[in-house]
Length: 427
Image (cartoon, rainbow, N blue to C red):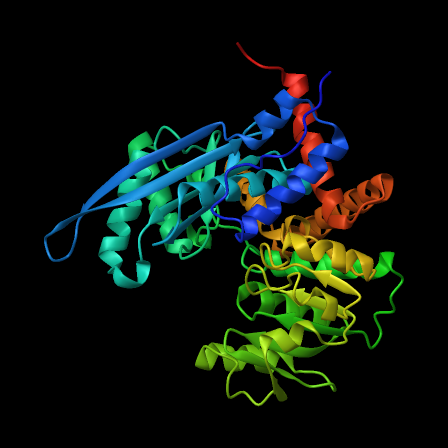
């Protein structure tokens, strides 16, 4: 069969966008797998794209119309899964790329979901709670033919939260005339959420870190760690890594950070953050910039802030032995070969931060069963699945003699491609 020469990546916002980096890696993996042209085109093309208008009456009585999107990238393995974000600058191309990202993440995690993503073009900071609820409910009503516990299951993402998921669940339930809490995940516990969901991404980062250190035979005793970003993922990661024996010597948030070679009290940092909303003024150590944190001589570096932090410009200065990506897209594609040449193991985002979607899957399962698990059971099952995913990616990387990142994409794409071939094309 003819194979394709990979020259045209899937649509992305621009050449500097981190999702373009993701698609460059997809193309590299597809080449190594020698995908047929038709399969390649199928895997880079969303199966469904929906754009809707969302007219609502604002608190001042005026009518405004917002735009909403939902993209289902792939549903060959199972119902599509992915977050909904509210932001004034989102585009359909961005949502397409994020939906593809979710396909690969679910495939690596070995959960029976495909990838999806959605969004509403709005600025939540300029909306009242009533206006936000109206937008959410109208968006849900417009997506009734898309959403469904057996079709497409949304979750929180940028600028959305448990409350918004509860509104989606309630609106959907009102239309189908029954309470259907499995239609979304990331809900409040009282309406079918799962224990352990908030901490799941950080716990997955912790599991990935120790799995990587074991493969590299790094002694965890007195090993050092730096965490960039101190939101939910960064703070939970730092707390769990510290509790399991790593010495966290540097932390940062958007305002900069601190270094203390004797070790930072992570619980103290969390308390300060909860009180003031920033690490600034906490006196946890000597002041350091986010850029300087990335270049520290530590055993483990966890970039858990935002995209494109490690690039072709600063990758040469990175000294960590292991990078575990808590954020989405913290490493640009141009940095990959530099980090590889330095012998730095990078546990890629689509593996390292997949704890969140894994426990979202657990939430969906519990909702479908009507039986809810203990926190201990959730965490044990999460850690087992994260270990399995890590080992599968590691073994794939070893087999193809490539980096962990490329190994992750090869594993994910191969699974979806094989599923497509077994199911065939309905015509």
